Length: 117
Image (cartoon, rainbow, N blue to C red; front, top):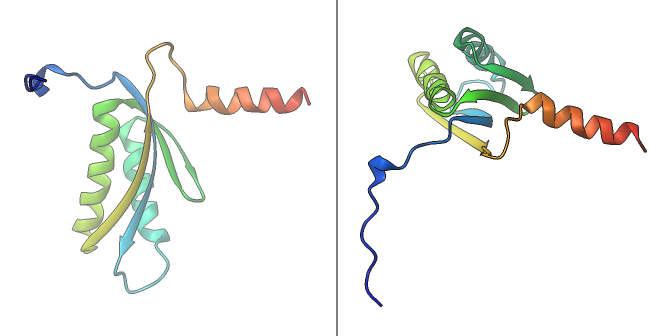
């Protein structure tokens, strides 16, 4: 079977919109508490203009693919600039092309279903 031609990776776009849930974990800090670092990240996110919601294990961002990922990268650099040498981040990203859906739409739908029980 012949080898397929290489992909033209510059011709493949990213999705227009995404919802990303991320948990940024500073490593090697002098204290087990990271609340001050997370507060710094939340200030950044608030200034970004993206829709977001903070929860006990991270933050959900919603908006253009490139901007969402850019803000997560900025969060890393913000903490590096504060002296955090190592950061590990878990990210779960969702996108869809069949309809526009916000994170609030998803939560509202489940709450609606729970109300019918």
